[in-house]
Image 1 (cartoon, rainbow, N blue to C red):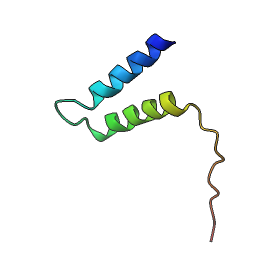
Image 2 (tube, one colour):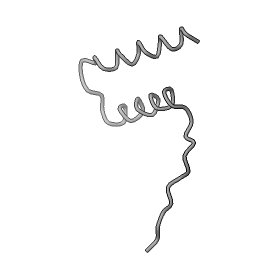
Image 3 (tube, rainbow, N blue to C red):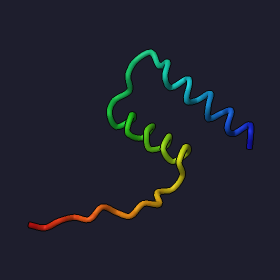
Image 4 (cartoon, rainbow, N blue to C red):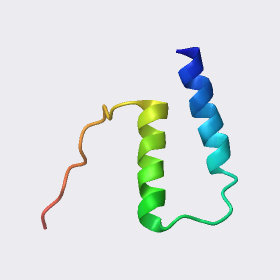
Length: 52
């Protein structure tokens, strides 16, 4: 598991040194993958929607 963590840390560092900024769709996907890898599955309740 240590090797996997070091690969994640390396990929994270490399993502901060890209030669150009990715488009918004790519950034959103990268952020989603980062959050999944760093915090895991969502455990919070869904927000309540108010109808007025």
